[in-house]
Image (cartoon, rainbow, N blue to C red; front, top):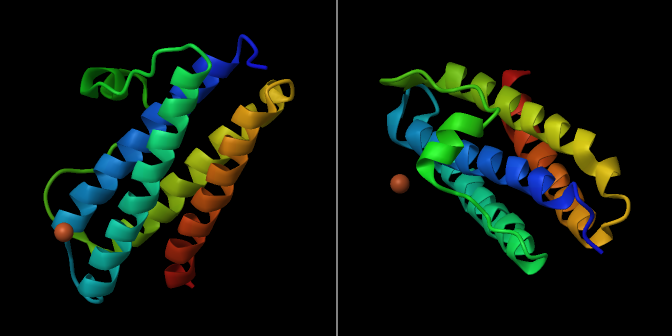
Length: 145
Ligand SMILES: [Fe+2]
């Protein structure tokens, strides 16, 4: 059964996932430097995962009777993801930025999990997303070694 925390917790996850997806596309278009192609393609793989997770979270909000808010203004006002600089982005900076942003988003989501102990379907969705964010963060972090 959904609990009172379900919709706000899922909504907070939704805006972070949308922001991360927009930022990954922005970086996909603006990245330059050594290993450009690998990072350019890696960013689009992350976008694919993020879009799937956005949909899963938004539809869970609807399924429990809430109204998901994925509007640009809402994302801009409520996302906890640090914003990207404008202009071209160097490969090394993009790799470090996404390792950090994906890891930070995973930890923010992870910290909300126990509030959903009475709503296991929502908790299960977020657990899967935390694991996915951790894997995506690792794929960037491994390039910094
Ligand atoms: Fe593209």
